[in-house]
Length: 487
Image 1 (spheres, rainbow, N blue to C red):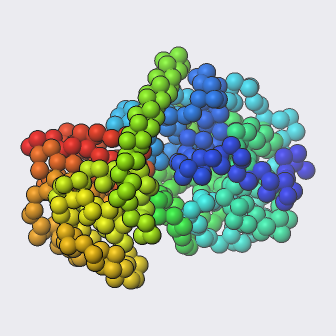
Image 2 (cartoon, helix red, strand yellow):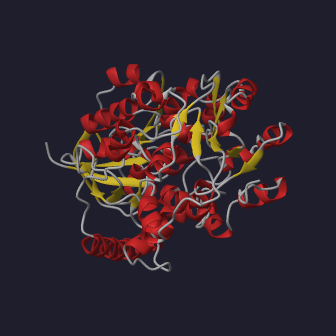
């Protein structure tokens, strides 16, 4: 019936992670810049060669409001490419460059049109991600789909790759539907598959607002929101995605007024719908000159190579501190990050915010005059504090403060040479609370060290706000070391 429909085995195969992306997964790098063929299309748009790594952010989908992707913040980048102009052109130090949406460029470049034998309706069911699951009454939704008027049949279900990897595709096959997918979101041919699917149908529908709505209408395919979209439960499988959780709980169609335009079953695209979609896609906006963007991308590549050289030199010099490393205590820091703490703690008075099991506490105690270990050990799993005390029992220059961070900060007035911030990173408020305290107790020209530059966006966001109070002096990717500017 549909030439793009897939068997179970074909579907499962194209939803697997491609080999080229695995090296980035192994390095625990953010993959946003590779999502949904965007990197592939960007290279064609701006003549950026495949053998050059990408050192810039790319908006991986369409956002209805002016939200900036938090994923861009955790990358070590200075620019990000966005398909629609935002209210600000600088976001916490990242310059936002307005370009044409890569999907629209691809469609135009290859002159993709709807097939003459297009039929039926493409259905984009609600999806989450690999790290976030959403539960809704899928059988109620299936019943509603089967009750669509005859003119919208046959139905072709287009699944997100994360649902296939979780095994949710079996339900749709068992219910007798034609099923397809554009494949794993990191496949370079994702955009090609997406438009192959879109060109095969006459209508499109979904039970939530996604990029497919805007791409479908732009392609000339009538779209309508339809069916059960009430989320019963959202489950988080990765702390690093905590900041994205709220978007998966919301009914975005209702929040941003999309349902006003697309809440009725339709076989045509109204003038109001077209104008709304064009506005969201920024089609009337003047885009940044492509040659100018190309030059910027090459400049960012050169800057990244210089950073790599500096990082290599720094890591090489840190090796001389290896004799102070303690083995056998679990820590979330790399060897190079631990050595960096030791380097700056020699003969200094140090405050460590977030001590966990004490691996860094012990390392620092070997070289520092004093170290004040500040933590709320109740936030860790059971038994951590007892293990911590056991690990530090042979050192008399470690002073322990176990309480809520707010209570500790209210009663701590000691001025010190170095402050290490590795406490609660789950909100901007928590990170800035710790950084504000660190700057308060640091002596002039003291050293501020903050871990997890690439774990959540909040560290970089807070540091941008404090950019006039501390100057960075190191090059490690996930560890910030800076000197406090004189009061």
